[in-house]
Image 1 (spheres, rainbow, N blue to C red):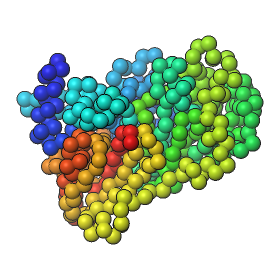
Image 2 (image 1 turned 30 degrees about the horizontal axis):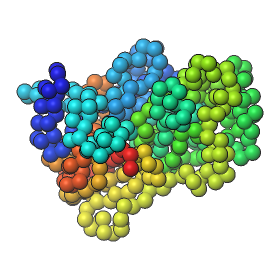
Image 3 (image 1 turned 180 degrees about the horizontal axis):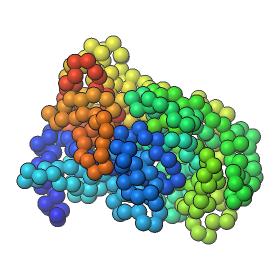
Image 4 (image 1 turned 180 degrees about the vertical axis):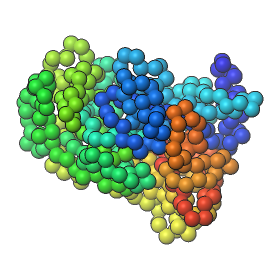
Length: 401
């Protein structure tokens, strides 16, 4: 299918659905983690890509970024596909290609001119236990390996955290007073078992319905709650913990995004940390996030919905939780294009069916993930909750500004 054919199909899809594009589920495995089994993926499909690739523990939304899973990673792993109709048949077009072909019509001329494309995405990550203490690089260090820095944010959906799994706590940063020399000593003990990096950090109990802001350069060891994570369009990281839950972590993951000439330069490796943010004595005050209503709650309920900011205070991305009350139809306006994922209920958006699945087979097409073009967002989308008893809930993720 050439670009002109793709353009024609996309244009027809946007016109037919009044600015709504449907996505196929994008599943991503991680070899160093154990799936938490709350992504609604069928249990028989958790290792659909092969045990050697690891279990599927992530689902990515509105992604134009390839997952960085090392040698053997498929070229389209992590990339979202639009599902469109062509001559009565479903066809799939990479979202990345769609942005390159007609980004002005999808995300708007401002985003295309300033950023050159869609430079954010979101994901669910879902693990049985904690992730190793790691850091996402700042722009300065990421640029040295040809990548972008990666700020991210967390929100813990009530709808999908029906169990806490093994460790519902996240370590953030380093204890105030920690020295760089102490961190270096931990890194030097990589092959001696547990290198003790968590002894220099502090864990916080995770609470469904709340979240955290995690700038690049901040060490963090996410816990076992299923997490909604908007982030900058990058998959860059460095693991600082040598063993988690008795499972060794390859040192290759410490230096994955470190230039080869610095693989044994501990001063350089520690320099990827934003030291002041890591040892911030008011980390909770500055980084913990509770939902904030977009306007007066009573006014919203009267109109048939509740909308809250769940990710905010970050120039690279933001996110809202939209709840449409049972049996109500509402018109919702936003200032920019956005992707969304359904987490509860069913209904329609601009006449397009949306529903939250109970269980998904690998390769199955769903109706729970969509994208709203800039024009449709500004004009306002009409959302109808078809249930008379259950709320319709979606998470909406936006790009920069």
